[in-house]
Image 1 (cartoon, rainbow, N blue to C red):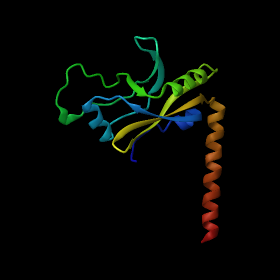
Image 2: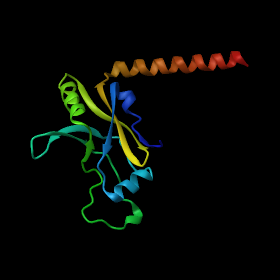
Image 3: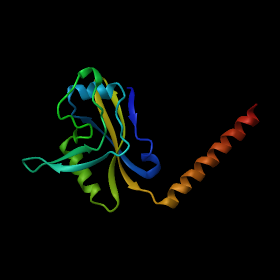
Image 4: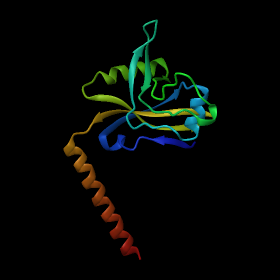
Length: 155
């Protein structure tokens, strides 16, 4: 399993309550581009849409996958197009119930390969306030200083 992309800001801006794994529906040249590590999850998020039969589906929105250079020119290529996520019906129903709770959202955390498939790990998250972010920074600094002190004492 090799990690292809990580959403670094997700852990800072959100409190991750639950994580899920889903497959991604990609075009051939998008697969090549993603496996080369050319994908950005910076502004990406996940939302529900209904198909023609009225069944809910999950889509990854605003993930930037640039065109794979050796593929040549592709007409009407949109690097931030919506990409369908592959989940079981029970998981989708569970997520619909959780998403309707106040303040919860679905955000992509990382993209990786599992066997020969490209998988997306996403989380059910709650947004952090500015003061929560400050507390996280303080906690991280305290842990860092404790680690440096214990390393000095071990020498």
